[in-house]
Amino acid sequence: MKQNNIRKILQENPVIPVVSFNSTEEVEPTINELVNKGINCIEITLRNERAFSCIQSAKALNISGFDVGVGTIVSEEQIQQAAEIGVDFMVSPGINKNLSDALMNSGVPFIPGVATPSEIILGMELGWDTFKFFPANLFGGIKALKTYSNVFPDILFCPTGGIAEDTHQNYLELSNVVSVGGSWLV
Image (cartoon, rainbow, N blue to C red):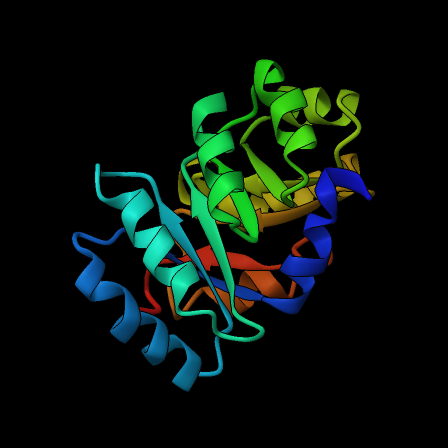
C-alpha cells in the first residue's frame, strides 16, 4: 500500500475541493453544499491559524463516506496533529525527504506535491507513485502531464493550482491523472 493507500481515496474522489476556511461556522454549510452536489471529500488547507479547528469541526460532523483531508502539510508537527484529529488524507505542496518517515508512519493516506522531473524521481526513490502536480497552471498544465505520462508511465497525478470548472475535465481525460483539486467547487 504505497503512501498508505492514497490512490483509493483519489480514485473514489475524481474532484477534490480545496478550501481555506476563515471560521468554523463556514464548515458545516460548505460541506453540506458539497454533499448536495454529490462530492464526498474536502481538502482543508492550513493557510491560517483557524485551520485545525475547522478540520476538527469537519470531522465532528461524522458524515458517512465523506473524506476530510488536510492540505499544505509542511512539518512533522502538522502531520502528527492531523493524524491525531483522524483526517482521512494529507496533502503536501512539495516533496521533502525529511518528512517521508513521518508521513509513512502516520498511517494516513498522503500525497506530496511535485512540479519537476527531479521531484518526481525523488518521490520514486522513496517508493511513491502518486503525486499532486502543483501548481499545475504554472508548470505546464496538460502539456507537462502528457509528457510525464511518457517519461513516468507508472506515475499518477492529482493536479491542482489554476484548474477551473471549464478545464478540470480536460485534465481528468489524461491517462495519468487520477483526480483533480480545485477551489471552484465552493
